Image (tube, rainbow, N blue to C red; front, top):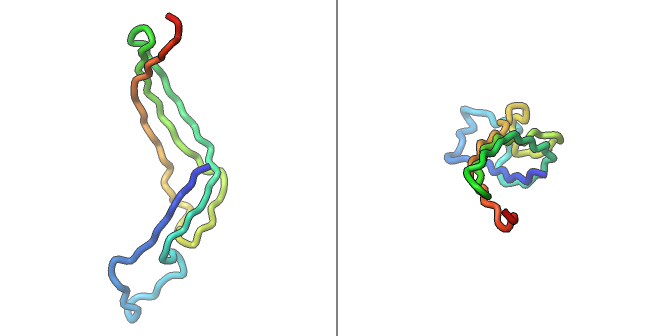
Length: 95
């Protein structure tokens, strides 16, 4: 479950004589929940006994809708892609 917070603000006031506001997005704050499918692909290489270097790529694919009046266009929401790298150290493995 992905918990998200959205906030829309206007930096300056809008001259309503020149522009007409669309009904969405609305101003304010909103919390919404979204069910996601989290996928990852990675590998690790041993550096020595109990020491490993790992690299993985992760993404969260949306599987449910999230109705929120603050979201203007739900069709072009970016898909998060994360590249992670690090070192794993195993303690007490008995080697």
